[in-house]
Image 1 (cartoon, rainbow, N blue to C red):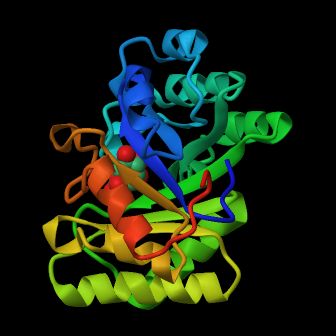
Image 2 (image 1 turned 90 degrees about the vertical axis):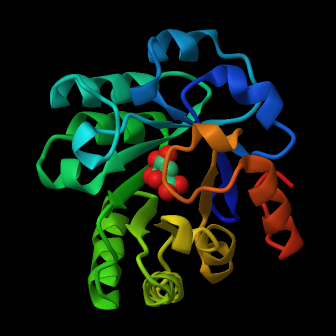
Length: 230
Ligand SMILES: O=C1C[C@@](O)(C(=O)O)C[C@@H](O)[C@@H]1O
């Protein structure tokens, strides 16, 4: 997965979405936490899109119900599958000292690490966002920050933090969740966000305010963004 340009990832609980997503997506974000048999699905996968594996903890808005050790172990096991080019690990899990297994496995197998932060309540101030992106950058290849916008000032704060982090040489992925933040899914990549997420179907959103895959893909192309597979 080439994070030098923008990666549009279709977010999904099923790898069966790959053929339909291929026309628009550069990668699959496979939500292991939403799948019944994620490792078996990975074993059976024969699609062409590279996979970013996410096993989102319930405490970070995900559906993983296993204990933390098992959750991280599943993610570490995913790094052994050839199609898995990147894994998503929460900054909070790294801070807690729970993520070493997956960080080590990813390093050994040359799998990229996306270090993620989600704020489902609001948008902290710009300096806090910059500090979070700087901290996440120290642990992985991409620092990902999803905040919740409750007014337009929040979206501007997110875009400024994205621009500052990019100017400082960090590789980031950012978005403002919620309907007010929807447009940041198109605009944040202009300011340096390197991953955009979209469900194949609007009904299968994995976060509030997401645009569907075809809509986001067309919008990103319309504003002239350089995409990783194109
Ligand atoms: O962290 C992210 C970003 C996201 O929350 C979004 O807002 O698009 C969607 C999630 O599937 C993904 O893991």
